[in-house]
Image 1 (cartoon, rainbow over the protein chains, first blue to last red):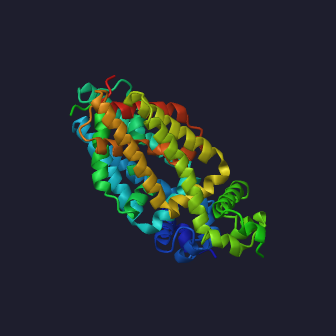
Image 2: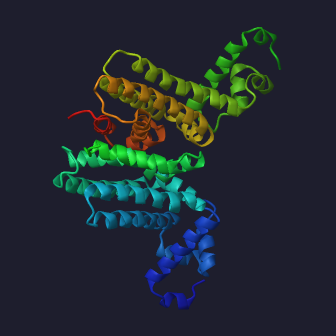
Image 3: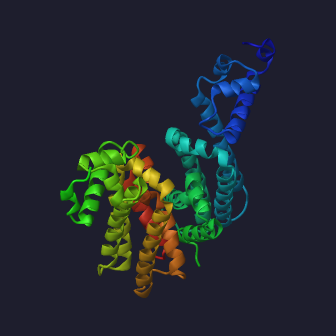
Length: 204
Length: 204
């Protein structure tokens, strides 16, 4: 059932609308329970019409997951571009990312299934995201070395180690376990950032 | 169908036999596909008889998971008891645990589902296991402080941070992602241990 009026609208707008409705369904009904037919029906479109904009349900998932990841990238880049000392910048960046992932991904329960599925199906997207984080860490570490704040021999290696050391505060499924079992993630976060900064050669 | 001959055997032996058969089924047929009936039939016992030794399938799972965890605890304790310098001990301990978890839990594919389920259902067991690891780390860190190898203000806090920093090399589901996507876990492991030792105040 094609509705001519929709055909005249901007394809980008239709795509955005499909993603909006899909995400809203994931949150409200659940990731696994939402079908392309549900999304189509909510939009007054046919399934075939939805498939003209996204070749598969998988493509819809990937776009939504991509935008979730974009938000995190943007937070990190914005902090990395400020003029603060490297030490403070890295501290603020790690804190902000943890809080963002905890709030948006863990506390908005309905997204949980999507995140678990993404860990299984879209690991390459997550991997690329993690690699961007490592690049940002490396840039900040280089600034800190130049400013004499950090003592690090190999900034790329140190950036990878920071990523690994921070993983439990970064990956939503790991944050979730801590939150669920009542661990104080805030105290743990401060301790972990102190530990990371010490490994980068910050003096006590 | 009770077989009198089984009734005369040592209950501990019967329990051990049930666990052995269950674990073998988990590996061969899969965790989710194995039923108590399968285990009973393999042993020539009735389901009711199996339930006399384990009140539920869940109790069987917990026992198996408990023995998997015991193996790791024993490796850690054995290394912690050696006379090596603290620095070397912590390095060897982290390396040994990573290798054990990678080999036993990740490469023996059939156990994967059990581990994922345990992360969901038996988090309290895993949490207690992680806390034992933190206690062992703390003891080694205290030795290192006394010997002048480490510079750490709060050994308990440092031990928790070591645990967090090492999590991606410790939790089987995280090791699995790296192995699956062809990351060099050996190089990453060396880097991470260097980073941890530096955070503990090891001089370059």
